[in-house]
Structure formats: C-alpha cells, structure tokens
Length: 216
Ligand SMILES: C[S@@+](CC[C@H](N)C(=O)[O-])C[C@H]1O[C@@H](n2cnc3c(N)ncnc32)[C@H](O)[C@@H]1O
Image 1 (cartoon, protein in one colour):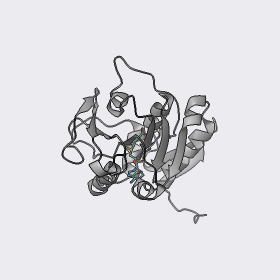
Image 2 (cartoon, protein in one colour):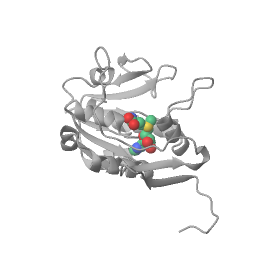
Image 3 (cartoon, rainbow, N blue to C red):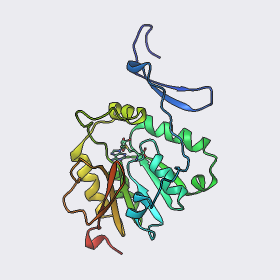
C-alpha cells in the first residue's frame, strides 16, 4: 500500500459494470479504458486484415495483443488465435475481458498469453500458419489526437523500433505461410521487402513470406 498523499499516475479499478478498467490520473477527463472481446462490425467491402492473412491461415498468433480488438476479430472470423501481450497491466485488462466474454466462438478459439512474444515464439515450439504484428508507432506530428485507448497505450508502452524489427525477424522464422504487419499509411515498413499487402482506410497490412528454411 502507498503512503498517504502519494500520487499514482495509473489506477486499475473495477467499474460499476464489473469491468477491470485503467485510468490515467493525469488526464482525469479521459474515460477509463477496458478491453472487450467482441466481434467487430464489418465495414463495407472485403476485410483487409483477413485478406492479408489469407483464407488458409486457420491458426494465427497475434504477437501484439494490446486491447485485444484485432485478436477478437480474428477469433470471431473462425481462426484459432493465441494472443500474446507483454505488458502486465494490459494483460490484466485482457484476462478480465476474456472472463467476461460471452461470445462462444471467441471464448472457444482464443487463448491469451502473458509473455514477450520474442521468447514465446523461440521456446513454445508453435508453428502457426500466420503471425500477426501490430507494433506501436509514434504519434504523427500535426495529426488528430488518437482515440482514448490508443492514447493510453502510447503513454504506457514505449515505441521501440529495434524490438519490433527483432520480433518481425523471429516471426519470419516461425510462421508457416505468412507474417502480416499493420502499419499506418505514413510509416515505413518495419523491415524492407514486404511481398505485397492490403490497404484499409487508415492503415495498411504488409505481408511477408517466412524465411525459406522455416517452411514445413
Ligand atoms: C498497438 S498495440 C496493439 C493493438 C492491438 N492490435 C489491438 O487490437 O488492440 C501494441 C501492443 O503490443 C505489445 N507488444 C509489443 N511488443 C511485444 C512483444 N515483443 N511481445 C508481446 N507484446 C508486445 C505492446 O505492449 C502493446 O500492448
């Protein structure tokens, strides 16, 4: 327990709806953030993330679970998903959301892991069809403020391009068919040489082929 008068930047608390929430006390007016595993409302046209992963990628590892939005989308689409998150607070939000999740398909197909995905991939012996990465990116100067969940993520988790490159290199030697990396349109690829990709309104999905000796 802290001393009386001690100031805390972040608070984890259950809200009235029984959700574990994270509050940033430096931005008292910002609504608390929580994770929610729910299917995404599908927009118009083909889904760029699902297209990038390919219809044959039934087993996917999401190495950057964050608030679980993409992992839920993948599980709701019928993929079997392992979602890995290294930050202990974000992992706690995800674990709470998974307990509350009432979508049977997501519950049945999504496994949550608290680990650094680089060591998990190196030691688990898993060889998923596809690996998905959505690394942090720095706020773009002059652009609109990101939505609250992303703003809180950006204040908690450092943008670390070196570790993102390491993660992508390790992913390339463990995926059977492809590695997909989400990037904002303005950002360079994490590593040179994506072999194609798909584009959404705000982001693109770079597709990499695994290194040859990692294929089955
Ligand atoms: C931009 S967020 C991902 C958002 C996520 N796609 C979603 O739908 O909510 C990136 C997340 O990846 C996590 N991360 C970054 N590197 C990681 C690693 N090596 N292992 C596990 N998690 C990692 C960060 O802690 C952060 O929560």
